[in-house]
Image 1 (cartoon, rainbow, N blue to C red):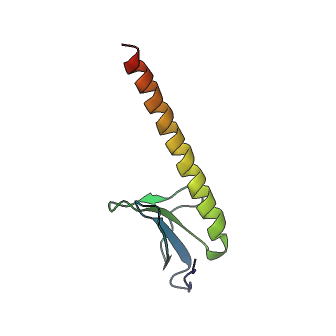
Image 2: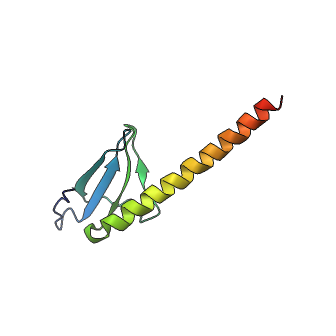
Length: 87
């Protein structure tokens, strides 16, 4: 993975995952609030921004949060399915 160069004007790295899970990186001046934050775009991208030296840690934290969220969604759907099957 090629890490884009940062500068004074663009000090952060933005990482995005598209709907198919492909990762893209950009240099940016935007900050999305830290390791436990992120964004979801109207185009279906999800990601966050971070300092370049912390990119791996931020991606790991983002994936861990996403996995927890999906596990909770699965649990809710399983409960709904159990309720429907009990009719």
